[in-house]
Length: 443
Image 1 (cartoon, rainbow, N blue to C red):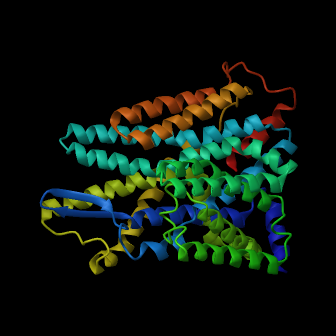
Image 2: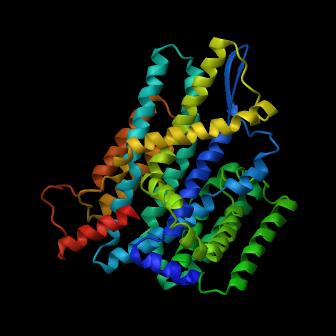
Image 3: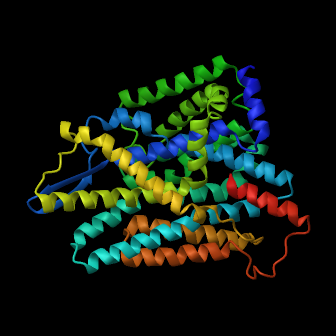
């Protein structure tokens, strides 16, 4: 059977594209591995030192070309969201249900994680751990939360931009790309780094919009030669920006704040994914990839939220081990450090997987009933975003964690009707409505 036929037979048996799900699971694993490599722990005469092991290192640039998967993750997020919304609307669902389900799916596991981290930080302070070390731990924990805030924003706005895509696909994505490039131009011209953070919206929304082109079949409809040329051209343009000094060749440096170079990364990844889509559909149906995909897909946000606490706990245990035994920890980027990386990475993956297994039920919980109020949905998304931004700007402490949890709980409550127990579904088949909401929640 031809690859195209095999892919068709696989995707028709399920509402999900197994190949795309498999790649998304690989992206989650890639993020965990990249962050794991960046953790550096040493013990000096003044005490433990926690630092970014990649700072000033030679290896972060080539590694970032392999493991910088965030652009692809947002493209796939756009693909999955657009597909899910379209399918649910065909069954009688609404954009409001989509947004409410997305808020619930993203915010609920965050409430648990941030709450636990806040309690742990409190316990550490109460047991005499130096406040500066606790502050560093809180800061490191909060850094990856930018993804939650931005992805929440993108998913909340997805129905709006999906409608714009259906009306004017090329104009919409062109405006987003132009805005991202303009922000970079202003940032470079003024030297004001803070300007670049405006691209937390434009860059990631543009990549999500690219996912819409993937979802509606426009990219797959291009000839293989055309897709190959576009992908190669994107890589060549990216290399050109590095050689001319427009952007750093370190793709990690281009994420904080995000730059338009990530758009080129996303285009290259999308073309490659499209070219390999048929083979991925076949290969992802095999037993081992299927088990991996089935484990990660329903636990993706839990894995993302918990891998950093796991890393921080491992760093703390390593420091305590060195202090109590007198055995020196290897200097980051040294030969000894590299020899310990396989065990370090395997431990992170195993521990994170164990936690994700235990807490899988939290992320899997479906919203009992989504609100039909635009005002409540807007307030829910705004409050959820403010909670995450607060942790990023102020830092994660026992107090800020408590405030963030309170705000996130308020966001969850707003995503449901004011009187959830007695509220009725819109005037349509309630069975269809419930089915469409579950479909949007699980995408």
